Image (tube, rainbow, N blue to C red; front, side, top):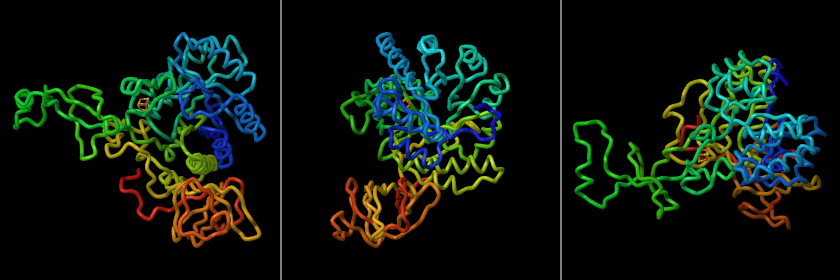
Amino acid sequence: MNSAQAKPELLMPAGNFDKLKYAFAYGADAVYAGVPVFSLRARENDFTKEVLEEAIEYSHARGRRIYLTMNIYAHNIKIERFLSAFCEMADLQPDGFIMTDPGLINKAMKLRPESVIHLSTQANATNWATVEFWRDMGVKRIILPRELSIHEIATIRDNVPEIELEAFVHGAICIAYSGRCLISNYVNHRDANQGTCTNSCRWEYNLSVDKDSLLETEMNRPAPEKDYEPLAAKYKITEAQRAEQNFIAAQFELDEDEHGTYMMNSKDLCAVELLGDMRAAGICSFKAEGRSKSIYYASIVSRAYRRAIDDLAAGRPFDKNNLKELIGTANRTLMTGFLNRKPHEYGENFEDGNSLPLTHRFAGVVRDYNPADGTALVDIKNRMDLGDTLEWITPEKTVPVKVERLLKPNGASVQAAHAGLQYRLPAPFEPDEFTIIRQVLKDAGHRDAG
Ligand code: SF4
């Protein structure tokens, strides 16, 4: 695909085979999946070679594409194993490899010149000269860093028009430079660049003054007439779950409430309203982050972006329902990232570090349907009670319905269904293989969703 094509690709994360199937059912053109050990979401990855082989066949049988992620920055000890895994994966004939490390890209291209290489966002190709370099190296597509504005993307396209440009439109953002980050490494000995980030930037930190000496502390207080003056006193940063560790002794100006301070916690990206501008700037692939997210996320995000891309290609105006649907997935507050303007302090969520459901919550996955009594067997994901309002969702429709009956698999009626178990629910229509259910939250989220 090149940037002149009318309809850009919708590229969704596939944390496992099940999520891959839902992403395709709900509209993805392509998915990316991690190769065990050699991708930056190594912890969430349950793809074995055999499963990947099946996933590639599944994708191609449906006319879809699958890219394999092998985007670590390797230390010497990993080079040999990496290249041998790369050759094994190349034999499976995926549609491309997402890679970062220049040395490994060079070696991989020599070993398998027929393989298509996409440059990972982790490589930080932030300007056209760098993109030109990678084009000359033989890389087919650049996955642009999230730190670029639409204007900068257009300049890259103008200078290197023949290369494919892919950009993130949805999902988490690192507070560090596209993941080039040592926070997790520093506080938890888990290296983000080797696929083992623990999201340490989102933990709940507390700040306290080192009170070894009252005299020293008082002497170093700023004079009251000054608005702000850096303190010379030693500050300690502790984390709620790891109170025994003092991570950093430093001088910062920080606010904190009774819960602490989420001083490095980025809001999440949502560029669904900017797809037209991004396409005009030369983006040929719109990518969502979130390999560790749920089937619900894979489905709803796929469906919302599918509809937005189809509307864009058909010249229809933007449908605000697509944004509402995205707000209906758990998030850390959505923003448009760096695409329109630099977010500065607006880009951080200082209130809480977790992805929270604000308007809807994943309720269940339909596993089976009995046409004789009209009930569906459902894997319950979050507790539901009689009287709750649910929405039954397929790739085509959303049907609201009140819970009036909940049955155990043996037919016994109950008042509530509990997460992790299976129950039967009266279905408002004959569900298909990919029907999911969400709950409409009575007490919609406390924070600004957009
Ligand atoms: S600790 Fe945070 S900023 Fe660093 S790589 Fe992990 S998610 Fe990104």
